[in-house]
Length: 106
Image (cartoon, rainbow, N blue to C red; front, side, top):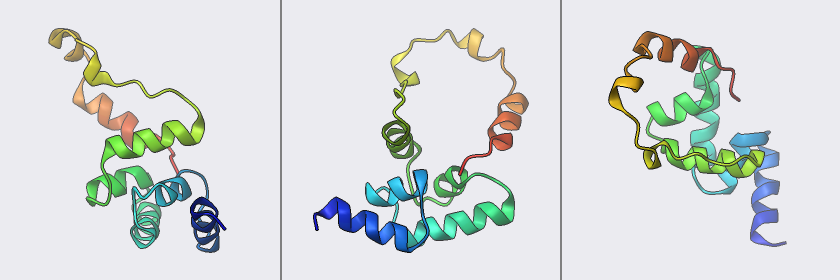
């Protein structure tokens, strides 16, 4: 069995699927940290991504790259765009926070 197949088999035994499984397979997060983050996300009614980043178990960029690969969508690097600061200020922090917390990510 190759490395990817053995990783996939291990992730499936723990009941992981989708993005959480991909993050474990890619080595972004240890399996135990993922299981802890999933549990905390359920308890706190928030996303597993929020739990992973807030808990220091993974970097947001690493999760974004893995999600891009998992779902087959391009990753848009906002750091590559020169935005006028005034246009960014048009969106309130409260609105950003509201939409960040209402998303239902795995």
